[in-house]
Image (tube, rainbow, N blue to C red; front, side, top):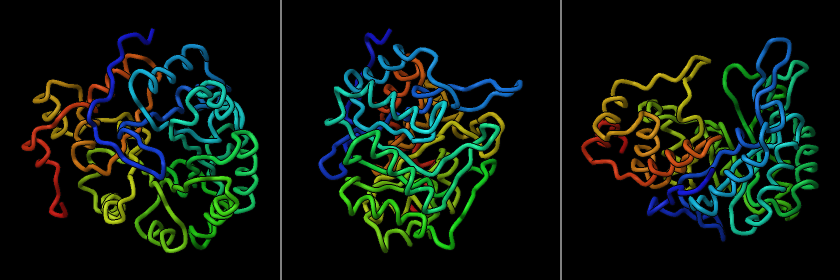
Length: 312
């Protein structure tokens, strides 16, 4: 059931070309795919959705009822490359012209179904061709996944991230992508790309605790200086494979705000910097409603100040 979902209200609107969108975005991985069981192991996002009709209804409700205007996915989601993209096109057909949607290239799977990041330009060119064929053109926003977490194997890393990005730039120059983005990038890599390409969006794993980490803050600060929206994913994930444990400061802030630490994370990031976009990776109406309510919250200045650094 998706009735009575809250609507985004004055979270701040960002623009990318002709697209205008609220700063809470939908990360669609959990809707477009589900985990698969193989040899007693659970393989992340390696199967088609269990209940496509329910997931379709939730994705459409996120747009039509909640007012989400940016939906994010990747070619690597699902039982085979492109499977998630097919579900997306089928479900979102009524909203394709009014919503900023983005796909990413770079991820592949190994023989056991594990994630692999392949940065070979020829591999990326083939992936882009297949995405363009499936999704049509122009793709509103096309990302290169430039890095990954420590547990993901990276193949064919180039001397410069620019070399891996060239297939996306070629796609843009052919008119097959309207805007370009990069995900999981360092500040140095982002600066290299900005020297040669029109980067419209940056997407990195980022939590409230990242605000105090210089390396991660450096990317946020560079985006702010260039007026590039910074998309935070994995805001409820730890830096290793363990479960997410919110820090004492976040737990205390959540208690004072009478919300969960997850809701406090969304609210603090969106109130912290007007350049933030937060990806909510929901799979149930309850989670979507919680994320929207958190995005609508105004965080007291005295709470925000606890998370500010000397660079602010």
